[in-house]
Figure 1 (spheres, rainbow, N blue to C red):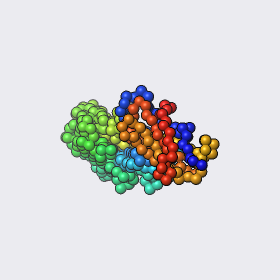
Figure 2 (figure 1 turned 45 degrees about the vertical axis):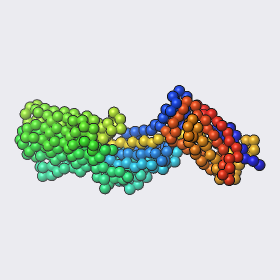
Figure 3 (figure 1 turned 90 degrees about the vertical axis):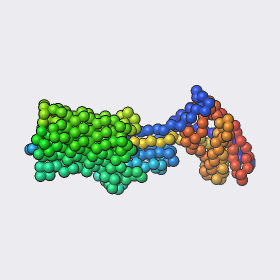
Figure 4 (figure 1 turned 135 degrees about the horizontal axis):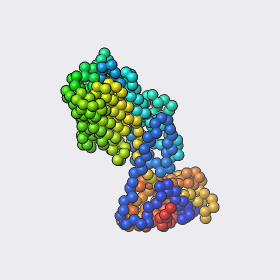
Length: 420
């Protein structure tokens, strides 16, 4: 019996909704969906029905390390910034539940204790969260601020050798503190989509000490935090978009960073006590999401400052260190829309179960139509998955569908687009 393709077989499944009415001719409806996962610890994310295996990216930043509390006349180092990793065009099944883990920032050291390292951030992880072996994409955390024999060593930023992804950048190392000046080092900046995080500045060895500034985040035009001069705090490093870091303190607190720049180091040698400036929150993805700058170090009895979100290392101090910024997962994809239906052998009563029939679809635009092809399954079902933005959309659009068995057009139907 001759196969027929009826209008009713076109069952539109449009997860993100059609946008045909109310648009001027030639309007491009290409759009990217973006998801931020910021809840620390283990959670699940459901793959959306309009997921596109051929146009997606997964980006992650590890948690920043906490700065040390050196105490007893020592200067603590800042914590390291978290690493960045990303991969594109990952194949996932729509509706599947994906296990993710967002790393927390390391706690600050108190009462003479070293800080804690940050945690790994992982996408599609199989139960192990202290390493990257079981994840599709994974970013290593920044190391904890440390001290050694009165003079602190640098802490290590998140390492690319411990991360997994097609693209990887290292977090900035935390700046070294100094026992002679009781001054803390700045936290390292987190790595981001534009590149490596920058180092935190060193503390001064002067008895009228200033602390080091936090490192700038995420590559671009970012810079390292300034090491403290003899009697003022070091300025924070520039952020990836060129935003200046927080000013170093001069007889007081350091200035806060912004847009991924580092916080300034405090100065307690020439005036009242203060704190380091907090690292700037990142803005690469939007005004509140990006790679964080390192926190400024604390001078003498001052506290180090917290690292910026996401992934900035905390500043070191002689009193308390600063906490590291937490990690983040960023999922971006170009949605698809689905046109699906069933091929029948008769007047819509019995589905054709032979399978393998070629179904073609032309989407008219008034100029040259977009042409797509698919094959039926043994149930007679077929579907077309078409990315948004592959065509330019007029106010109304016509679909032309036909079977193409033996490369012959047997029947076609002209179908108007329907708004859902």
